[in-house]
Length: 450
Image (cartoon, rainbow, N blue to C red; front, side, top):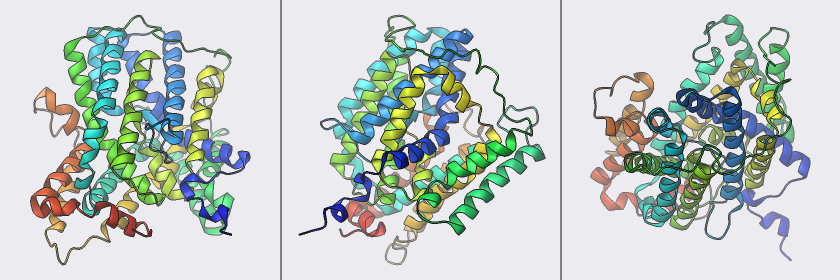
């Protein structure tokens, strides 16, 4: 009789509750800063009170948890069922700021609901583009994702953008300790301990940061113990045509980014991502985004920050990230708990961020190392130009400032710019043949039987 246990794919592996919680918490801590950044920015742009801002953060965490559960566990043909955590897309920040200042929160949510539904409906058609994502494109995209995220980790390590003591030796020292701790844990330990190296590194950094006065627990005592999210808390949505079009454009960008993230994680966890799986994942993005508009939250997408954590820890089970979703839902009910975790200093997050985001770039390079540059010498140009253009927004955020307003959403996202460039160049040099064996080559790169 076949060994049932060994027949279970790593991505579908179930673990003891204790391990699920620890691994899941690790993912939450890794993405928390990014998760709360958008609601803080939008609350400031909309001129919301402190109480409304706190409500917005908790509504975001609650909906983020629901979106993650939908993506990891799946319902019907919705949800890609890989360890992908959902978070607010930064691509929507600029349009939402404009909407907040001109039409209020109701206009934002009207646009989000319609854009989410449109994403759900066009997912099956968009997923047919999977053949245009062979390893030469996928590897380039994954590399750009990692390189684009590295500045975030570096900024955290220096104290966080806007910090008056940005670049302080204390901040950088704490970040270095966290990074070194993660490396040493992976060097001298294996199994469970090595898998939670990021979490242990964050704990070590927190212990060091407390006596240095870097941890600010202000607001914890005044935060409410219980907070309940409910639909349309800011009023019934307004459906403004201009805002809806802008948000649909954002979601098209998000679909490109999500596709890159899905393929990246698919390679890491040894799961074939085909048209069917991509459609399910993009449908989940659409439903989660529409749900965000109803529950006072935002557009949702695969959170690239956590892609690196999957690669770094080697933990492939989707149930780990499903546990992260449960934790996020619970945090959405308990503002005080969310405030405590929010007290984790940027410098501590920075040490872990540099490791995680670097791993994403390294996985992209690993994929590109399997590409055939001898029979297809033009592949070198695809990699070179797509990566080069993809880092432009990172190197110089003002490079495209004089371009038309409608193009800013695309041009200010290095991930989207790099992805589109790689797809176009691959089609130019390799034609349709470049995508014929996409999944076969991805499988071979991941060490699977095609």
